[in-house]
Amino acid sequence: MARKYKEVFTDQGTDRRATGYYSTPIQVATYIYKRLTEINPLGIKVVDTCIGMEELSSPFLDYGFNVTGIDITDHVSNKRSTFIKDDFISIYELFKNPDLFNVRKLSFTDSDFWIANPPYNCHEVSYIQSNKAHLKKVFNDVGVHNMYSMFMSAMIDMAKTGAVIGLITLDSFLTSKAHKELREKILDNCIIHDILLCPTDIFLNQGADVRTCILIIQKGKLATQPLVKLLNRPSSKYEFYRKIDSLDIPEMPLSDILLNNQIDNHEFLIGVPGVIKQLFSCSRVGEKFKCITGISTGNDKKYLSKEITDQHSVPFYKNPGSKKFYCEPDGYLIDDFLEVNKVVKNFMVRNVPLLFKEGITCSSMGVEFSACYLPPNSTYGVNPNIICDEKDIWWLLSYLNSNIAKYIVRGVLIRTNMVTSGYISRLPIPDFKPHQKDTLTLLAKKAYELAQLNTIKTCVVINEINENIYEYLNIPPAVQIELNEFCKDIIKKT
Ligand SMILES: C[S@@+](CC[C@H](N)C(=O)[O-])C[C@H]1O[C@@H](n2cnc3c(N)ncnc32)[C@H](O)[C@@H]1O
Image 1 (cartoon, rainbow, N blue to C red):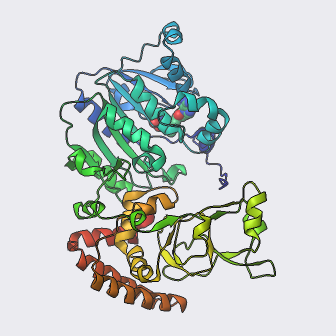
Image 2: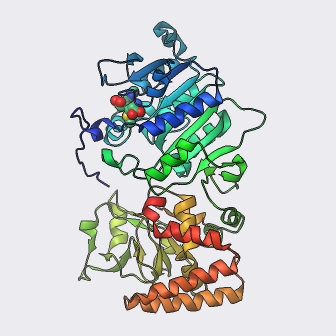
Image 3: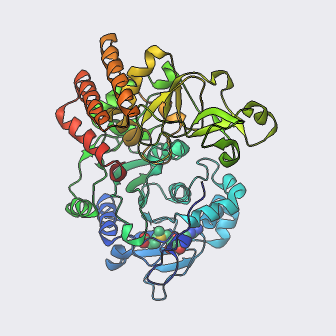
């Protein structure tokens, strides 16, 4: 999808989006300083791998630490750090090539503390695009998905054993499938001290509505991993600052926050209630049903029509968005699409044997998650679709449209990005007994009829479904409230 470009200027007049410049708030810099020096009270040397205007480094500088700052851009004149104007990724490449590295004699690699608020946004898009082939070789272990993930991986490699690494960064690495290798690298090479999800308004006054976290890790493994300080995403930065100022952060064993079943990808589950985590021992959607994507046309304008025409009569569903139970097709696909598939390179029809079968179509784009009935003889796009028999469609629709499923998809499996069939395949399905399936089937059919009439009474049935599933699964009232709050304020909480 094309990125809509919007300029957002810093105090210095440069466009933040072009440079990826978002200043670390002082409260965050102070927290990272306090935690790093608490973990290693004897540390003296610090390196900030993208120091900017020394915001994140400032508490270390105030207390007289020896700070080396690297940045591709020289942002300010009166620096307090020892400044190296260079691309940190190039420095990492030198590090990987000892002959070159020894010539350069960079003296910061024995630092006790590594800190960063790595760049992101437009800057990373153009940087990665123009250097992709080369970067793939440099980051052959974790891939080149984001600028921040490359910074994180390089810092882990370059840090000496015992060095403490403190980052404020995007948090997509916690659950995204693309970052599975990075998660494994962190787990294999580091002790994890803190994972605090930041509120979405933390960089809002600088024009960025982003999901970030504070991550504090330490290079090397101890015989026992300490308890991890964890914070679920607070609703506002004021609540967040109050919590981090007081240093009163709850702790948990690492094993309680890792999704470690064979089918999973070592996702970090922050603030996920135990009863929800237990559901992951149930069968998953993909074990019971075919959960698939369908057709990417490469040019929807050319091959899809809003109305039925002489050449377009195949109903096509691509994203129910927030519609639940019932939705109209998003358009009508060209009738000879199977012929087009044979000749047009970027027109792709996947899972041909399952075409036109009935089932469920799920939302993909946007933070909402919902599911609608997919009638027979339809086609669908790259959103997740579940092909199943009529006897399973309705109870499953009830479950997929419940708050518990929405929470698992958006609070556990994938907190960022679009929802693909891979994520929905791993959604646990509670062991519903036949009588429970019957109840959920009746409720779904009722909700479907009401949704067709577009009446708000559908919400009443959805509430009934929520209560019914909570009761059936013995979800404690406090957890019910937490899940309902999450679903009500999903944009801020996911
Ligand atoms: C999000 S800002 C962080 C600024 C400051 N350190 C802070 O914490 O507020 C990211 C910084 O990364 C720098 N940067 C971007 N690409 C870089 C690269 N390849 N190597 C080193 N620094 C880079 C930008 O110039 C910018 O100063």
